[in-house]
Image (tube, rainbow, N blue to C red):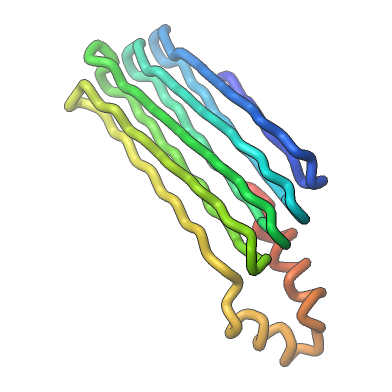
Length: 158
């Protein structure tokens, strides 16, 4: 199993590119990432995974919290070739927007050339709801402390 982990919870500016090929029988790849971005941080992550071998597996799980006017671009391309029977691919990116000018762009792309595979993707970009903040404030927490608690819990990858 090959693991790649990105941890940018300290507002670093980054531009990362990952290209991986899964060529052997039962090759396994897991990519995880946590990003906390503030101020005018403008960063990007490009992921490209090619499944060539039979019964290969890839799993991408990304979490980001954007504050102020931070901007994050994520592109994730997963290609499963014709000879990669019984392969599995999963791409997930979840982003919380806390700043009025913060924005995120997440583009997952699945290219499937084999009908005997499983491939899924999920993207969520949202703001913390007023209902969540109200619940925390009703328990005596200030808004900033509530946002910090939600952020820390959200950036924990299961």
